[in-house]
Amino acid sequence: MSLKRFLTGIIGFPIVLAIMVLGNKYLIDFLMAIVSCIAIYEYSKCAKKKNINVVSWIGYLSSFIIAILHIFPQKLILVTISIIFPLLIFVLLLNVIITEMKITFKDIVYTLFGIAYIVGFLMFFALLYGTESFAWNLTGQIAIWYVFFSAWGSDTVAYLVGKNFGKHKFSKISPNKTIEGCIGGVVGAIAFCVIFTLVLNMHASTVIPILPIVVIVSVLSVIGQFGDFAASVIKRSFEVKDFSELFPGHGGMIDRIDSIMFIAPFAYITFTIISLIM
Image (cartoon, rainbow, N blue to C red; front, top):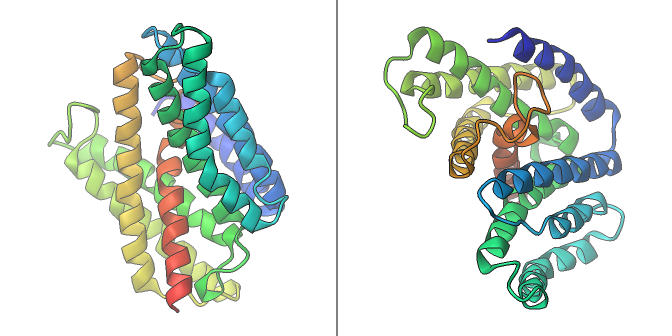
């Protein structure tokens, strides 16, 4: 692990911890909208290197929806989200017509994918954090840490296991990753989240059972690792090493949150379903 990567992580973690603990859903919505805009910018810039003109202003406008998720009544927001997809297609195709195909069909397909991949996934992060009550006396502000620990615990242990014991390459898409590292990542995520759960049950009002958490986190860890591979696929398609150099040693915003982005929707869906059936 490079010194730059280590220092960035050491500085970044306390900042994230302070925001998540001291913040509220409105602040998180606003910050996720900013994160989304930065990620859209990185995605658009990388796409341009392959002569793809992502309609970035639509991506920025879509990101704004995250900022207002909890300002208006939830039913109104859900209705807005449900119509956003056909509206996006309409506006994007209108861009093709207005520009007389200077914006091509290929451009709008990449734009639509970028919005779904970045804005759509980050929206679930905000929704998860803003949920007041799940099963087991679990709040969104606590549940969000299962996303972080599933991602960061997996990344950290996967790196250590892969570097010291990895012998079998997992995929040519990401040649540094090994099967041993991926398995170690799942075990690491489980260990982090089990310890977190035990501490919560001892010092908070939660009554979270360990076995379901082990199963849930195992799945979330695999999904997070898939998210990392998915980002590698996109980068290979754009022929870039990192989305940007925003974080020294870590790459860009998307490089830093690729696992978290993928885990958030599935964590939200999982905790919601458990709450409905209990």
